[in-house]
Length: 289
Length: 289
Image 1: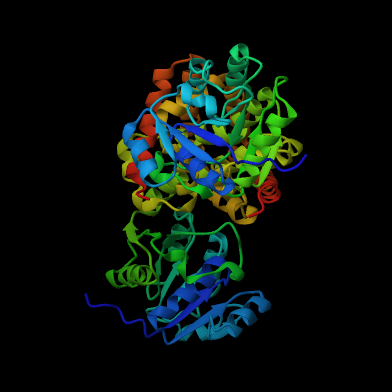
Image 2: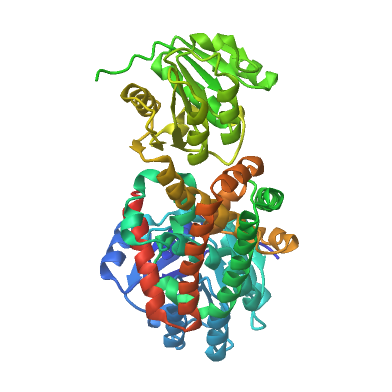
């Protein structure tokens, strides 16, 4: 298949950290236009003024008839709602993608009402920052990031190809395909569990104790709690939509923690060394940097 | 008290990541000489060749009679052994400090045999890297780091002043004083628990599963598991020397994790949001960056 020509109209819905970064990164694809949709007029003005988008709207509408590719950078529930609310507006043959980090519910819900002449390709760029909003958006948040596409039986080769190529051309280092079900399994471990652990570490003591710790913190504490500075609205939605799988991962993790505790309680240095060597070896082979 | 004049002879024992970094950073204090002690002749040759140290020895000895300040950058047990083995060699009025991240045992053991004319000032620079060895040493690992001094009733104002000033002049952002007991309480939470959690996350699944995850990893997993690339010899010693306090911290953390699980199991979104808001607020106020 030859390279897809992005000489098209693209709309980004939700001009926050992720949506703003998409709009910025998509310029490199030389699209005909980038339309920004956000309910916050000030954000739109900022994005337009800075040339991040070419046109702005506070909600969907008939203008979407000219849009070839819609990128919904919204919370999962809002993504489903945006698609549902604009079913009459989307272009024949248009592609809609999303960015949310839970997939089962989003794909099932959208596929349940999406007509055949519009295609939804579910995508998840594994990138983010602990800060929110367009002020922190940057084209380079995608550089070398992993991009996950979760195809359903309603997807076409063309639809998948467009999102795959977009992901690569905005800088992602890898594009992989897994089912929505498998995606949510994996993400419970690779993304949700780290957030759950970070939050639980920083919440494990009373507030006064924590506040007295600032002079006793090194790199390990900073790194491990970075994502504890969490967007509570977004992440409570993400956790609840995947609670079954996340509960499983928390319990598997707790058993792993228990093994370490057993080594400590039994003063079993050999067992502890095994645990550490295992961990060091896995970390090293998993992440080459 | 006027500034201490570091026109003295300093010996660094153990020229690895930490010892090598000390030797590099101490140059800024313009000491008369920096002596490197390491059992590995190749490391000494490298350090001497690069001008990181001025003189080298493979072990302690009579030359220590001319050394005003000895910095033991060794594992805790080796620090105690080095001091014990060189009791006859240290200079009258000389200062010995260490860098280890557990303090109760080190301070108790050394104070039990140290004669009155030599002073041990226990210190803990809260810095490190996931890589070992002099190749990764750098003067700037101390920049803005927290430095903890754990005084005992054997310390003098002069001894504490020298280590305090050294810490500040190699770049540390804060120098704080707590008892060895309190230090080990705190460090169980701010340093050992993050390491225990990182190791337990990466060990929670089988090796094949972990190896298949490389395309599904984002910043949160990378950050939270960074310290899982652990030095198993060093950290098994550190964990075992503080196992009572670390076990407590693991159990407190597990109860914090359980509260999150309770919110998920009960589909209690408000409880989950509270947990997240609490965490975000604490992280933000604790670490301003």
